[in-house]
Length: 280
Image 1 (tube, rainbow, N blue to C red):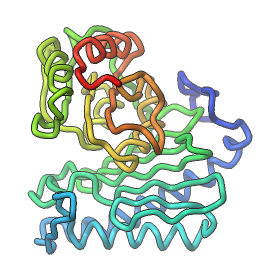
Image 2: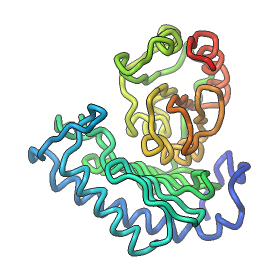
Image 3: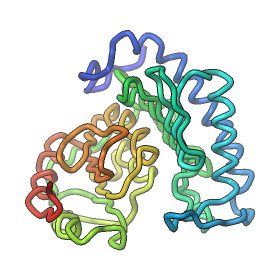
Image 4: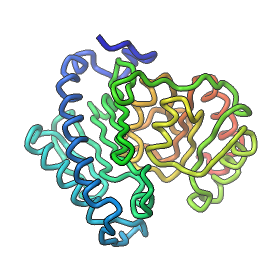
C-alpha cells in the first residue's frame, strides 16, 4: 500500500476516481516507456528543426513522440479528451483529459543536453490526479498520484525542508521571458534567495520534488508545461499555485510558483504580490 501524501484527499478530487487510478497509472507508465523509446531514437541524431508561429523550436522528434502517445491514448481510451503541445486539442464530453508535452525542453534536446523530458498529466473534471515527469536520457521518472506519495524510479521522493526565501535554492525562468511588470517580482525573489539559476523546465520541478531545489518561479507557462507537475510536487510535500495562490488548471494565466514547503510558499507569494506590477 503506497504511503499517503500530505495532501491526500485534498478538495477537488472525487474519492470515486481514486479507485480507478491504479489502472491509469499502469497505462501512463506504458505510455512513458513508448515515448522514451521514440525520443531517444532521435536524440543527438540531428533531428530536423522547424520554428513554430510563436518562435519556439520543434523537431520531428517532438511530433513523432506525441503521435506515438496519442495513438496509445486513442487505442485504450478513445473517449478521453487530449491536449498536446504539438497536435492541439481533441475534445470530449467525458470528465477525463490527458495533457501531453512530448519533449519538454526542446532547446536542451537540440543541444544534446540530457535534461529534456516528457510530461504527461491526467485530469478529472479539470483537476490533475496523475502526473509523470520522465527524463529519458537520465533514466529518471517521477510519478505523482492523487492521495499517494510521489515516487522517483519507484522510490519515495520528498521535497526539502526550506521555510524561508533567504535560505532557498531558487530556479527562475530566463529574464528574456519576463514581461516588464513581472521583472521586479522575480528579481526581488532572486535577490533574496541564497542561490538562483535560470531554468523552468520539467526537470527543475522534478529536482524540487526530490529536495534538490526549493523553489521554481516561471511565467508564460502552458497547461502542458505545468499540469503534470502538480501531482508530482504535491505528492512529495510541496506546493504549486499561480502567483495569486490559486490552484493550476487549464485556464491558469501561466505564472506559477512552486515551493518545497507551505511556509516558503506563503513567504514567496508575499514577495511576488508586493513587487508585481502586473496585478489585476
